[in-house]
Image (cartoon, rainbow, N blue to C red):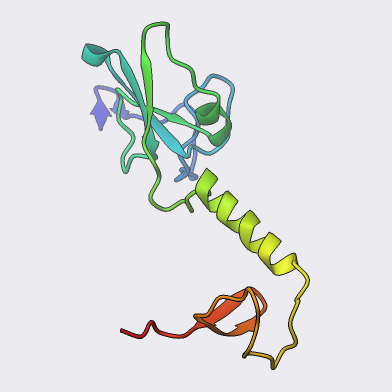
Amino acid sequence: MESRRGPLKSAVPSNVVSLVRRCSRTACGRPAVATLTYVYADSTAVLGPLATYAEPHCYDLCAEHSERLTAPRGWEVVRLADGSAPPRPSGDDLEALANAVREAARPQERAAGDNGGRSGADPMEVARRGHLRVLRSPES
């Protein structure tokens, strides 16, 4: 671009352009990981994965600021799940894991090769290895 005096020059010459988007919060230079958008008509703040392009009406936030995000009184915060992040275990998953650990920790009451004539054992169980069981198919 040129002016009447000749080509325009940058006030601060720079050959480095940062490709990393930064957090929009003042004085925060951490890399952005999420994008915040306000839906004024619904009084909703939507926090989702980092948008493909920086938009003037959206705010990029770092991990810390996105976790601590609160909305104004009367507004709702909707947090969209990031498909690339591994899902957090649910309460059911943790309970199933605890039950499996308890089962594996129980003392083995039978000998490794003893499969017949057990009292109180599951009649469908053929063999056992650690917490895994081999079951006989039901006979019709």
